[in-house]
Image (cartoon, rainbow, N blue to C red; front, side, top):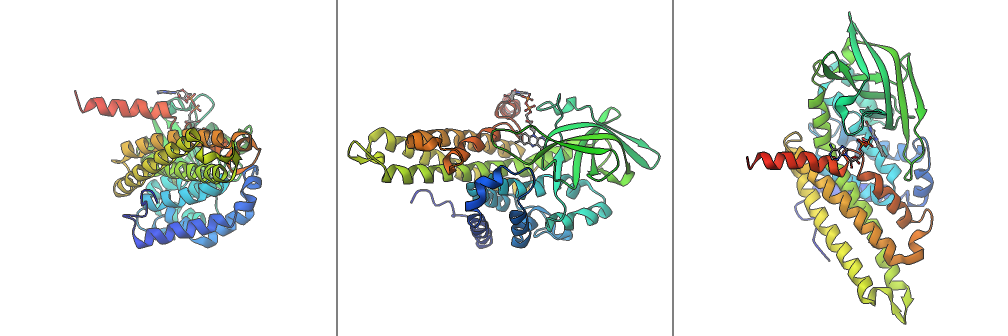
Length: 380
Ligand SMILES: Cc1cc2nc3c(=O)[nH]c(=O)nc-3n(C[C@H](O)[C@H](O)[C@H](O)COP(=O)(O)OP(=O)(O)OC[C@H]3O[C@@H](n4cnc5c(N)ncnc54)[C@H](O)[C@@H]3O)c2cc1C
C-alpha cells in the first residue's frame, strides 16, 4: 500500500534496512527508559557493536564496510532505529558524525588508533562545534588552538555536545590564528573536563566540555591548519540527510500509533477513522510522510555520490522531513485526543523528539537562509 519505498534499493540495502528494523524491535520495551539515561544504554551499545551496523559509518580501511560512506544505507538505518528509540538512533549516528572529520582529515596513525575502536563501540565519538555564544553562527567560536613547537594547546568551552558525558574523543572546531582548524581531543587528556548539559524536553546524552590548556601532539590536528570548514561541510553533507531519515522513521511510528488508535476507538457509534476530518488528518499525514520519504531517499543517494556537492539537497531533505515530521506527529496526537498526551507513550515521545530535530544540525531557518542564497545565485 502506498508508495513502494523499497523500489530502487539494492538487495544489500534492503538487508541492512531489515537488520536495523530487527535490532530496533528488540529494544521497544526499554525505549522510554533509555531516552532518560545520561549515559549510553549498555544493552543498546553492545547490540550495535554486535550488529555490525556501525561499520557503515567508517571507511573499510579502518574496519568499516565500504570505502566511502553509503549515505543512503545510513539514512535507512536511522529511519528504522528512530522509529523505535531516539537514544538508539543517536548512539548509532554519533559514531559517524563524531568520527567523520577524523576519517577525512586525520593522519593514518590517528585513524588507526581510533576508528577501529569506533566500529567496535569501544570508543564513543563526539563532534564539538557549538559554544554558549556560537550556535548557528559557528564563525563566532572562541575556543582556540595554538601550535607551540610540536604541540597543540587548546583552550575554550563547548556546549550541548551529543555524547558529551560519554565520549572518548571530541572532534573539535577551534580558531587557529586568523582561521579555523579541527583537532581531535581525547576525553582523558589533562585539562579536559565535562559537565552534563541541562536536561531538555527530549533528553539526550549531552555534555558541556571545557578545555583548559589541553596539550596534544601536533598530529591531532585534523586536515590542514585553517581548513576546518571543508571538514565541517563534508560532515554536514553526509549526515544532515540522515537526520531526515530519522525524522521519517519518527513520523512513521507516530502515524502507525494514530492509525491503530483510530480504527479501534469508537465515538459516535463508529471508529474515529470513519469520522471524516479524522480520516483526513490521517490521510494528509500519510501523503506528507510518503513524499518526504521518497525525497529523502533520493537526496541520500545523491549525497552518497558526492557529499560536498550534495549539501544543498541534503539540507533540503533535512528541512522537508523534519518539518513534515513535526506536522505529522502533531496531527497524530490530535487524532488520539487525550490518549495522545500520555507521558512516555510512543506518540508522546515522538512529539517531544520531533521538536529538537528542527534545531540541531542546522535550524530550519538557517538552512533555508543558505538555500535561498544558493537559489538566487542561479538567477543573477
Ligand atoms: C539535542 C541537541 C543535540 C546537539 N548536539 C550537538 C553536537 O553534538 N555538537 C554540536 O556542536 N552542537 C550540538 N547541538 C547544538 C546545535 O548544533 C545548535 O542548537 C544549533 O546549531 C542552533 O544553534 P542555537 O541553538 O544556539 O540557536 P541560535 O543560533 O541562537 O538560533 C536561534 C534561532 O534563530 C534563527 N536563526 C539563527 N541564525 C539564523 C540565520 N542565519 N538565518 C535564519 N535564521 C536564523 C533560527 O530560527 C534558530 O532556531 C545540539 C543541539 C541539540 C538541541
